[in-house]
Image (tube, rainbow, N blue to C red; front, top):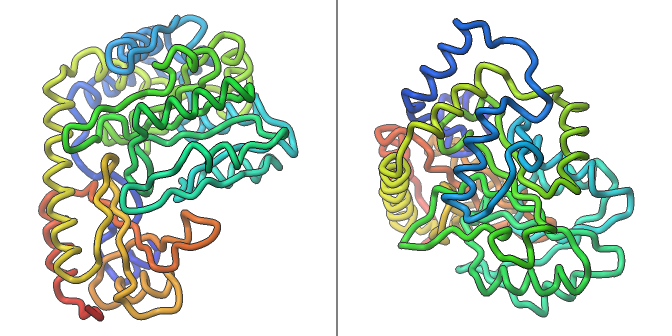
Length: 368
């Protein structure tokens, strides 16, 4: 969709590129590191200062105590953390529970390793599920549950009750819990982000994954991290080194300075800005009968596109791009079954570009 959008000179609300400004301490920290010669390999799990900054952040924001020397691994993006974790924990034929709509990289990584995804379908508009549905997906071959909160593409934030269901079943069936919390600072309507590893019964069996791409608007830097018990982190370090050697050295310094120097006001302002953008896009979608499932977190909106012509979500996405000049992602990219009537919109754009996209949406004709 991004390639086709570029070809027709459309506005890209498909890929989560996040084209807002990079915070000055992050830019300046990377620049100074380059000028000061910090351009060679780092330790396989990242520079000490960044690991220490991550440990402080995880304790303060996520409520998770961790040792920066043995439990923090800096990786090639959060997707690199996920790949390294899967290589560490799974063998061919192992089953892993995934909630759908899902983030495609999670499913495709598992399939690449010959692990078997087992799906639990989330039900709109709140993207809910029951404990019984989760338990039904677990078999003797199940090794883990993947939790993406806030979620891409649905914007779902897992509640404490839902996490307690996951904890109870993970303990009962001796499962790992792998989290993807890359959108942890994007949460709306007063909701609290709860990290699964904050629950005492999940701390030792959870691999907490996050990164800096979204919060600092550095998606191209490819820096993420995993926090895990030393029992699992040693293998995660090994496979991360095998796949990536290390994260980009000077960029590690940049995000370290960002974590150290940016205060709560930065994160609060960021969240408030994205809450305004969410409202702008959702209001525009409602006006043209593309009913949005308003996200609880992240910076994506899944919308009902049944009013657009087409036999599936790809045709509906192409129709929208070629008539309004706005690119989206077909809903079928996030579901093994279903999704034909869904499109995903990204609102991680500069405000003027998002406003222009909303104006273009108003030009389309739908079947109300």
